[in-house]
Length: 326
Ligand SMILES: [Zn+2]
Image (cartoon, rainbow, N blue to C red; front, side, top):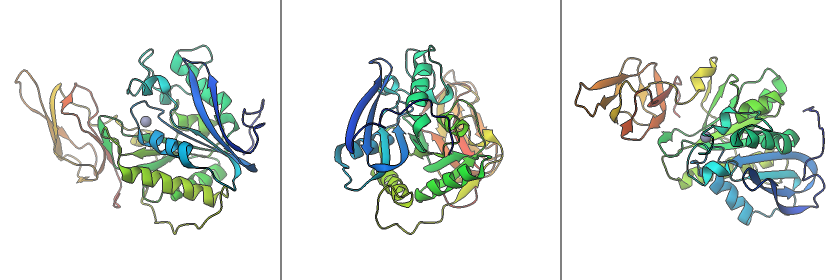
């Protein structure tokens, strides 16, 4: 894809092999790991855009610690933890400015710490990459029906490549949706860089199945895009939801809690629900009347708040209008 290259990426002059390099400062910086191979394209993969998401970092650290390919074409750049300030606290956002890294792209050079981090990531790393994977998860307080997603792109070439990348993660269902600003996906979209994000289960832990799904998907990508040689798997046909409305895939913005109190949801991830169905209740702590939560649309439960406590206005559930098994 044609993009203006104002200067060289730090890995351009590295010799072949495995390298570690830190960019930025101690407070706002990124630990980068690079596998430099024969001349070719660059794939960038990161975890922990949000600091309470551990599947991506765990998978990428396993690559850092064990993967030493003999024949590699191109360059693989891995950032196990993109948002160090948030990761150290185990929270979604950095506590010093409270901003969501995946809402502030392209960031600002002299902005708040999170804005500076987005700017650093974009201008030192992403700009020089040909593909980007951002490995997310449901984090500590939610559970997700694992999926791979991307923003539908008006450039058909980018769109086709994104679809091909997503197909490698064939144990996930796929959710494509229109552009929303501020995200890692938006930064990629604006630069015409084919991009996928994955959402692992979360729920405060790490499923070994999720790590395998990430590994199988990423290595399938490396083979199909000719970074490494090896036998390709026969891919499972993925259930796909292509949303026309951007907000449909804007997770955690629906089924807002009608009150503060004790939250009891009576659905599970992947359950089928029908619009109007009661999916849970909130019991206010002052003993006032129980409030019910009704499904705003029909579909499958794709994100579930697993906390027993809620504040009025907190999102509780996301329901994806998809018929196929996910
Ligand atoms: Zn995330």
